[in-house]
Structure formats: structure tokens, C-alpha cells
Length: 298
Ligand code: BG6
Figure 1: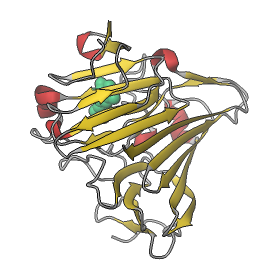
Figure 2: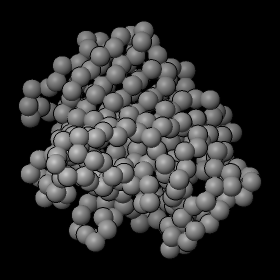
Figure 3: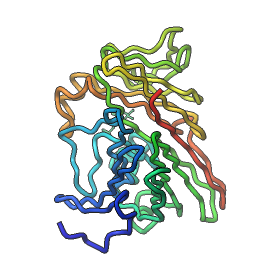
Figure 4: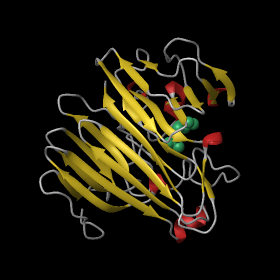
């Protein structure tokens, strides 16, 4: 497909922009260390694979892959709200950032050191129609043998604003029935499957036996997915994030989602690096906030 505008410049041989048949502008990255891909629609990382490993990210075979639609998998960027917008059921779930076209600020790097792409989204009339604030958001995507994602939000306006955010990462796993997650032992959570009831995990690693949709507030823990099937461990470290969200839709919810295969639910697990609910961020005029997720094999 012909690009709707001149494609940004990449790095010859290692970071190449192209347009998919459905009109998504994508950046494909391939260095000595790993391969990765992202789309400008939503600043959405869809692929990350260190050499010698299988892909760390899950993307549904039934996902929409067209401009303006959320992608089911990879790393959706949720901003400036998470889930349904309070008091506005018509507003897009998880905010507008994941369905808006971001611009490219820079692409740098080399075969040996990996590639860093910085994408930028600034307020426009269209974003102000949803959310009446001026902002600048940047997603820095550092692709080495690890994937480091930094979401930076700046307030250039005259008034403070409140926002939520999440790097809603879908991890590829062998079977959700067999994996465990360590790092959240004893942690308190809000159970969205039980109308938001407050619960606490026991001392054991987290296991999955049904639909799971949990927000762990005031939680800065490093989480590790232990996957005996592949076998491997995926470690998620974070900074600037006080919420962790854990999600698997299980059977019925998966069947109800049009953009998710009925039998895909065992192969994915979302561990989301976030600031949501009581951890939402208030940003003063001129202030900047940074949240980082570092994803690596352990
Ligand atoms: C999770 C939420 O983060 O995202 C779930 O906690 C939600 O409640 C899931 O179902 C998927 O959301 P969406 O909007 O991508 O279907």
C-alpha cells in the first residue's frame, strides 16, 4: 500500500518503516540482539524477540490491524484513562492514545547496541474533544536483548491535570493453566471479576484457574512469569509505576470478544505496568512524569 504521507526515516538495514496492506505504518527492527516491530497507530509494540528465544509478546490472530482500531496483543498504551472513562460511557476504553497515530521523534542505534525509537503524541482538537487538556506524551522504545518502554507525559498547559496510564503488555505463554507469577505474594488487589472487591493474595505464587482481572494498587513489585512449558522466565521490572494489573479473559470472555480467537486465551497473560485508580497521576503545569517497564528473559 502507498503511504498516506512520506515515511519517516529509519536506519538502513536495521530499522525500516513500511506500510501494511491495511494501512498501518510499522517500524520493523532487526539487529544482532533481537527483532521487534511497532506501529505508529497507538505507538504499539507488536513484536519483541531476543535472538535464540521465541517471541515474548502475544498478538491475537483475530486482532484488528487497521488504523484507528485497538490491537489485541503486544503493548497497548492506555492513556489518559484506564478502562471505561468515569462518567463517560461513550469514551473509548483505555483512552485515545492506543488508537491515535503517533509521530516519530527519532530512531537511533546500531546492529551492536540495538535500536531506540521515540514516538510522540501531542494534544490536538481531536484529543481535546475527549479530554480538555494540553499534553505531550512520548513513548521511548529501547530494543536490545531486553525491551525497555518508557512512557513520559508532560503538562505544557496552565492548569494541573489528572491522568491514568498503562503499558498493557500481553505476554506469550505456553499455557496459562501451568504458569505462575511471583512478586505479588501477599499483595492487596481489587478484583474486577468480583465487582471490585478488595482481596489479598496468600503467600504462594499466583496461579490461574479462571477469569482473572485484578488491579494491585500501591504496588511497585518486579513480577516474574515462570513458564515451565516453553520453558522460560519473563521478568517485568518497573519504575514510576504504582499499579500492576493482571488479566486473562478465560473461556467465556474470550468467546465474547470479536477480536480474540476463542481458543487463544491459554496462550496469553497480561501483566500491566500502570498508574490507575487511586494511583492516578496529578501533573502540575510544566511538570513531567515517567513510567518505565523493563521486560527481559530471567
Ligand atoms: C484489562 C482490564 O486491563 O484490559 C480488563 O483490566 C479489560 O477489564 C482488558 O477487559 C481488555 O480491555 P480492552 O478494552 O482491550 O478489551
